[in-house]
Amino acid sequence: MKIDLNNKVLLVTGASRGIGAAVAKMAGQSGGSVAVHANSNLASAKQLAKDIGNGSEAFEADLGNTHAVIRLYHGIIDTYGRIDVLINNAGIAIHSPLSQSEDEWINDWHQTLNVNLLAAGILCKLTIPNFKERGSGIIINISSRAAHRGDTPDYLAYAASKGGMESLTKSIARAYGKDNITAFGVAPGFTRTAMAKDFIDTYGEDYAVQDLALSELTEPQDVAQIVLFLASGLGKHATGTTIDVNAGSYVR
Ligand code: NAP
Image 1 (cartoon, rainbow, N blue to C red):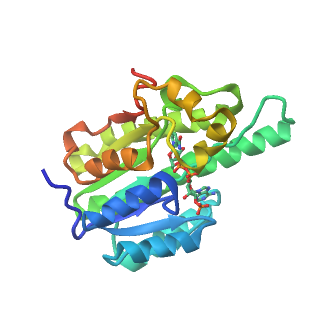
Image 2: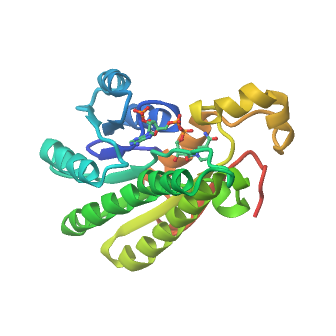
């Protein structure tokens, strides 16, 4: 079995760091051309695209802005003419306790849903016709353990956005399978990235590991390996499914 992404164009959102960067790197090692998307860390994305090679390029877009999402899609089509694999990975987790004012809390919900869910939905809406024309395509949506297990009351919007990602995945898989378009979710648990840093800094790594079945924290490459398998097309008949990568911290 070989993960072969030669002649494939992959869009990885949020690829400037963390899980997205690990996915982009591995995709490049498998021969893929990667559209390395970033928001604030464009310099890192540019360096990563250069390191990957294979015609990879960096693209900048604030996914909280719907116009920027649309521009991102068109920028990639102008560059490559197509997308073979869309990986909706970019995400934010905003601390929004119920004690916030209504305005603050609602703003956080809008921002979270825009970046985590609406941007992914727009990219699917724009990419699916392109997939249909070309006769195939793969979508991978990065969800979260929170979609299944729930999250703390301070992260209600985050959990809700990830639940949305999962139903988006299922709907696309069921609607477009006959067009040879497949869709998958990958639901990481606690993974060592900037998103998890505050928690580790506050409570310590031992505390984080206590919750796991395994004795070590999940690293970005542990998630990336699963994403790459799905991106390769080898998981075709699992379309519609979400794979948990949570070190056994929530087994469903
Ligand atoms: P991370 O290290 O914080 O990286 C987040 C990525 O998203 C960065 O590339 C960032 O771009 C991008 N991003 C943030 N805000 C954005 C915006 N407004 N517009 C466009 N891009 C934006 O996070 P991660 O841990 O790798 O997370 C990747 C995915 O895994 C997310 O969907 C997350 O919800 C999910 N996940 C993570 C964990 C975990 O424990 N780490 C657990 C479950 C699920 P810039 O750096 O360029 O700003």
